[in-house]
Length: 134
Image (cartoon, rainbow, N blue to C red):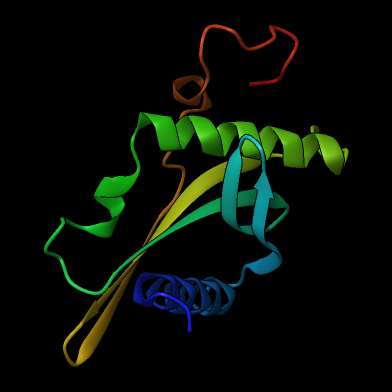
């Protein structure tokens, strides 16, 4: 049997995907993983590729879910997105990074969506190649 936090995370991702679909987005990939990092959901929103981080908590004891996206996570997201764009020959596509926060509380579930949470320059270190669009 899977660990409780994995079950909670998977339930949060399913809820986040349904929430984004209801907002009119199309989910094109889930759990894109590479050596650089992971993207929970990759969606399309009116022609824009959206790389979505989903943060799920079953209670707010350790802070709000969105507070868990720090500089290192942003760096991993940007690197994983760059690899996705390269593999899919999609560098010319507009894209952004969003966050969906899912909080499971007793008797209720709260879902929040923040668009454009990363300025890609914040997710790159000084070693990135100057020819990259980011």
